[in-house]
Image (tube, rainbow, N blue to C red; front, side, top):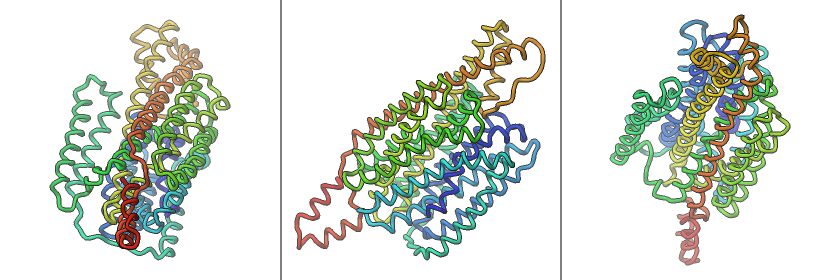
Length: 523
């Protein structure tokens, strides 16, 4: 299952490294390139609950196979994008279908892992699952840098051999398809996809449309209204896409809130740190990938440690520790961004990664352990929906902050070098578009006072971009601080699964205190 989901994790980061080459060859806009990244995450968020529900209804093995096929076919089509006017729409569309395939594949794969391990071993098992899967996310930038030196299209085609091996392993594993009774809630899936899509569209386009634009708020508010309608609709459906009763468990609700705030930073940090390294540090794609490895070194170690804490003490200590360490790590990292030195930043990048590592596996595992009945696929779908919706919102919101602050800084820099205010504003907007959507080490070209001013200000513009990224990384520190505040509300204790409850009830006559102690542990 880890091999099967490898593609989905690698694709969260590999495209960011190839972004400059994709933009140059296909002529994408900066916002278009951000949508190439975000379309994948948004589709993951919109359809994860559907994937989890389908795993319960049709069996996880079957859904893993279907999801893998959808994913790899979409990958091939992404790599075959034609040049010209259709390029941007083509790439965004098939990135979205990639996300749909991943949304089918991942919750089904995780449901298999959850079903195989008993609760007392599940924390370590899922810590290993998320830790190795997270390490595969780190491989994305490294692999992307190497493949991009040949052709950026290879960052999509590399999924083909991985998918072939994954399908062979799934066949060899002889997975038993356990199915539940029920029907598929198609209207609920449509409402969820529409609501999330509109929300993220509003946040993403706020830079272009402006926060004072009616279109921005129509999308954001309209999306929230549709999501409210989705919740109301789900309460009246016999077989809902999401069984909202699971949120009555306080621990599950806290796990979901902690995951939301942690994921505001986790996936976006790949994109923003990579672009920062290529723009402000003048790093190559391979150097930018190595820069991210510091983050993952902390993440991988803390994931294993967090899994052990979960098994012994429950999720609460790991979540609190992760919130504090992550907030401090991101804040210290933000403070070092303007020093323009990778060597000065690596300890703080590792600390930020460790904070998130302490959170993701314990929160995800604790939430799944609180599944209603045997609905592991469904509950996995809920938690992963929250995670990926948060990642999409984080990318959109932080992207808007980055472009706004960069534009202001560059305009002030150009005005300080003697350009008129109206000219500085136009040029600053163009420079911001060119560097916030992707990293680009190409020197400015052209003649005349404007081109000369840009060349003279190149070093200052790199610093302007670093200062803008400070706002983003401080925002990530705030997100981890909010995750810590949510973790304080966690009731503590370890979850008791339905199977264990049955065992405790059977053992109750022989050991009357067993059931009550189990209930206290899961309360």
